Image (cartoon, rainbow, N blue to C red; front, side, top):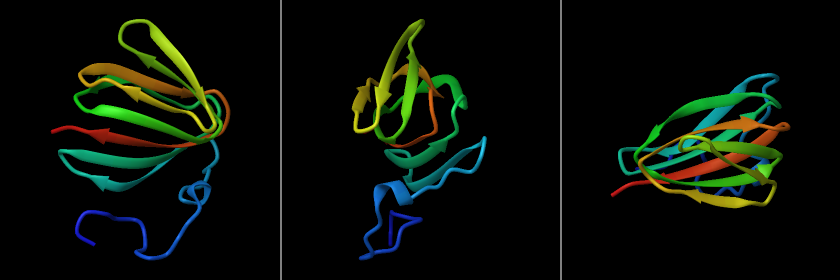
Length: 111
């Protein structure tokens, strides 16, 4: 495959089986990661977090299981749960915290 990685062509896989929990750590698996697009799956244990950092790309979060808090801009936050999708604008700082064991994926896009 030219752009996609870490997935077998023509073989279906359940979303919740793409990535597995690895104890009290954050696991991630990228399907695509280039200057214009990133699709990455994450497994986060309860209490694990990714510190705020600046993102130039627009971001979609899809929660497969669990619940996370997204901290964005200066002091804004939102909680999203299993089955939720949320979009974040580009050119902002954001970070996340797992409120329970969570599996999710993100899609980041930029022209």
